[in-house]
Image 1 (cartoon, rainbow, N blue to C red):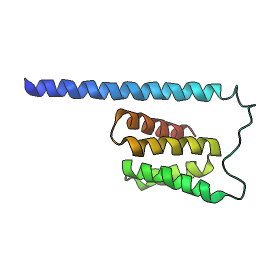
Image 2: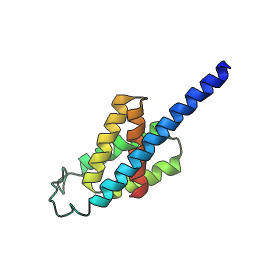
Image 3: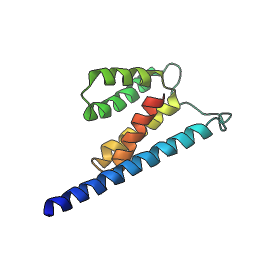
Image 4: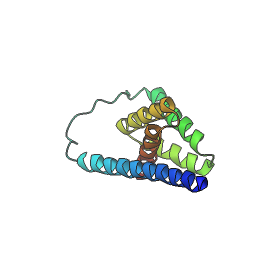
Length: 124
C-alpha cells in the first residue's frame, strides 16, 4: 500500500513537471510568433563586431550547462553549431536561463529554464 502511495506521488510530480514544460513551450511559441510584430524595434547588441570573445564565453556558459545534462557528444556538437549561429539577443537569453539553472539547482524553476533552453536550441 505504501509503495502505491509513493508511485502516486512520483506520478503527480512528473505530471506537474510535464505541465510546466508544456506551458513553457507554449510561452516560447507565443513570444516567438509575436516577435515578428516587434521586429522594427531597434535592439542594441551587447557585442561589438570586434568583440567575439564575449560571444565565445557565452557559448561556453551554455555548453557547460548542457554538458551537465547530457553526455551525448553528437548532441553537444550540434548544440555548439546552433549556438554559434544564433544572434546576440537569443544567445544572451540562453545565457540568462543557464545562469538560472546553475543558481536554482534541482528545482522546478531550473527544469523549466532547461526546457526553454532546449526548446530554443531545437527551434533555432
